[in-house]
Image (cartoon, rainbow, N blue to C red; front, side, top):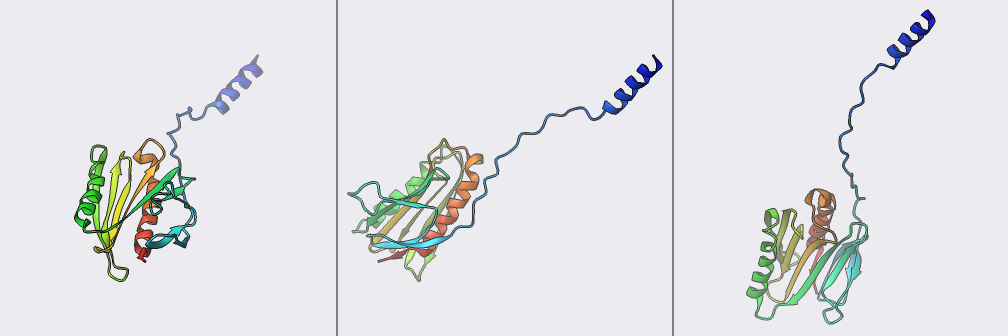
Length: 185
């Protein structure tokens, strides 16, 4: 009997430890490789460098310079829309500046920054959108006389800012690189 009690006390002493605690929720860590770029030449009055991960897609053959850069692993696209300037620069600018305003309902913040590249004769704005808006970044570029290009990021999923933030940040860098390397033909 004494041996049984001694064994029982030994088991109780050894088995006592920290009580189990619930684990905190984990977060998905999305890490993307460093971007590599290649000069893209298409039959349009502009060219630029695109990320090698992006697939080029022209959905509408009637508008061959409306180009989509598709990122399959992120389930996202950068939509590019080209318009020639024909005494309509003011209207094109107004339309391009209205696009970010459409996201103010869901956006927490829309921050605009002016872009100027005198060497490539490109001028415009870059808009960063924070919050659960449909588009996380938009831009427009023009040479003010002949060319006008707009672009926007869209994800093929319900916008949840916290979830798409790593991918959105990655694509914003791609847009900035596109803007810096854009050349009018």
